[in-house]
Image 1 (cartoon, rainbow, N blue to C red):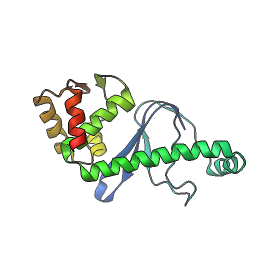
Image 2: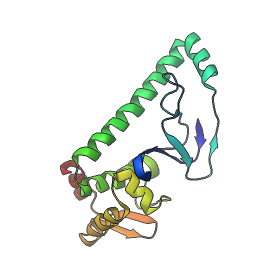
Image 3: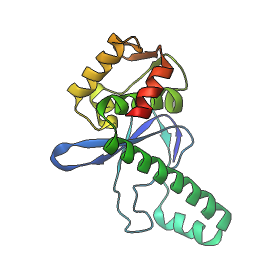
Length: 174
């Protein structure tokens, strides 16, 4: 349970390749993916900022779920939402070209994580690439193309989306 702060959720793949599947922030619950199925942690959650969090033992969570159906339904809705979000991310990574994936990442950070424009990001370029399912070099190249086209302004750790409609169009068309 993340009470405050930001954390990244990543899936570790072969040969050291990582995919950041989500950024979680204030007032959110996340599990390792196998809490009820195999009691395994299929994701790694790493703090990006100072965070205040709590850990809930699986056995205690199971006990509460078995006696409180309203809580169980609310938690099921939360997990289903997380699952659908990860599914959408996977589909976008598979079916979009690199510019569409970079556009998705920039819009996600603006709208879902920081809620402002411009925004200061705390992720490294490698982490941004990991969110986009691409190499760091490809991510930086696409970011530079967006900047050269006047769609964004980018400094060391700040993104200013200048032509959001264009970025949305790139996201839609992949």
